Amino acid sequence: MVAVTASSVKLLLADVDGTLVTPDKVLTKRAVAAVARLKEVGIHFAITSGRPPRGMSMLIDPLHLETPIAAFNGGLIVDSELKTLQQKVIPKELVGPIVSLLGETLEGVWLYQGAEWYVQERSGSHVEREAKTVQFEPKVVDSYDKLDQHIAKIVGVSDDHKAIESVARAAHEKFGEHVSAALSQPYYLDLTHPLANKGEVVSYLAARYGIQKQEIATIGDMPNDVLMFSDSGLSIAMGQADDEVKRAAHQVTDSNEEEGFAKAVEHLILDLHQG
Image (cartoon, one colour):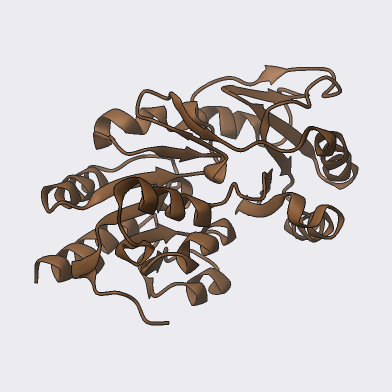
């Protein structure tokens, strides 16, 4: 792969968990300073994540975000006031079959509809972790039978990583091009509208700012970041990413335990941009 030169980068699109924040979900002072320096040299900064919009709201003020925020891997794009700019939802007739497929094997299934997050057990696997991460509580329901409209994302949860990967393959086989299925964490399988992926976020931002996709840099750590890598001019994998993700990127930085995001901005974009 041949990357564009850093001097031609006009926008940096960053994943959040595993990239922008530490393993403890902390946004470091060095990361905040790196984003501020990007803006000083005229480079836009945007974020995308499998999180819901409310789960990224705590990043808006410290980063002074003015760019669109791409939640649910691009399934819902909002402005800095969390007003919807674009939404792609899972077809109503597929919600039930997807829930059934995931529920047969995995430990939990979650639904996201608009601003709400639904679970069937508050004590379920990873629910507490997710509530702390996104900083709001899920709604607990007995059944998903009546929740089939305007679903932006369905998540399968399991600490059995082989089971997650197996169900991801089964979802591809059963639903084909009608949904996108990708891991946002080793224990989360995200199913969204087929055009709700981070590659489409690159296209959206390029059109919005009137720039070429080759003028966008991307940084992430998980398989669901690979589509935005392939659609951008400069792609950077985090140090803790698996080998497949690293091979898909132009560059590799340190892990999110070692200020990998800030170092990538400083040394792979800013130093070369200004040099």
